[in-house]
Image (cartoon, helix red, strand yellow):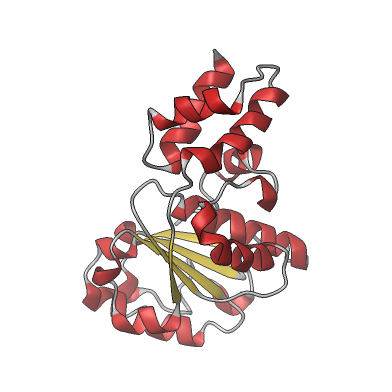
Length: 209
């Protein structure tokens, strides 16, 4: 169990919600996430989609921005589902600590990688953890226990297209003193088209050239 994996690097790339590129076809989801980031509301969510689409990064950033907006002092609790026995995890477990109010968000990554019978043991934790919001990530929604699906609203995360990503990349390149035309950026990103992770890596290479 760990706190905010790579959050400093994420905040360096995406210091505010408006810096985060989204797929233009998912404007409704963007509005929902903006409200969470600004602390207007919070809810349990199940973010699912292809590997590299940005699910885990979005989860960590949303939890951070919401906590900052609401003045909550403690970081989110981040759990890698493959490395913890959820069947034995309880509210009194010292690694969980929800009863002390030390986390307002709990992020559980790659829940679809473990057996649904073990996933089912998470239901009581979600129901009893008053004041804690859950963000669960998964690649394959069909491998998620139905009880979790009903408690955490499923939202499909689709990586931004090269066209969606280009304005963000243009700002980053200009700030680094290496301006590039949008059309050239789109061409670069089309070469690695597929997910947010690979486009971000390509951008870093362009900045460091």
